[in-house]
Image 1 (cartoon, rainbow, N blue to C red):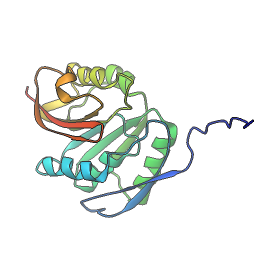
Image 2: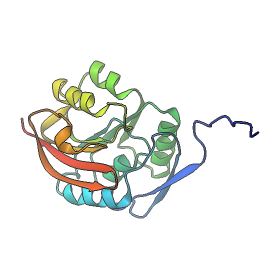
Image 3: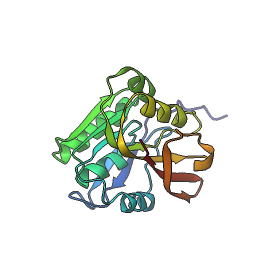
Length: 196
C-alpha cells in the first residue's frame, strides 16, 4: 500500500516570458502552487494589443497578482506605476525578487487579501486593472463591485477579466461596457471600459 505523501504548498518553479516592452523576451520564474495559472503568452499578447494605446503612463492594479505575468508585462510596456496584491506569501516574495532583478522601482507589492484590502484601504483611482482571481471561489464579482463602489477606478478605466464563465454571465457593474472578449480553452477573457 502506497503511503500518501504530504502535499507541498509550493513545489517546483514555473517560468513566464515577458512578451513586449523594455524587458521583452526576459524569462522569469515564479513558485508553482494551487490556483496559480499565469495568463498564457497568446492571451497576454492579444490583451496587450487591445490595450496598446492605454498602457504607457497608466496606473495599474493587479489584486490577484499570482505569477505577476500581467503586472510585469504592464510595467515592461511603460506603466507609470503598478500595485500588485496577493494573499500568497511565496508569490509576493517571488515578485519582489523579479522586480529587483529587473531593477524596477515603479512596482509596488503588498501581501494582502484583495477583498479585504479594497474594502478597507483608502482608494486611489487606477487606469487599468487586471482581474484574474483563482477560479471557483466566487471572487470576481465582489471584487468588481468593490472597485466600482469604493472609488478604485479612474474615469474611463479599463478592466481585464479572466473567468470560467462567459462575460455575459458575470453580473458586473452596469456602467462597465464590454469592449472585447475571447475564449481560450475553458477560460473566458474580456476587456471592459468603465463609463462614468
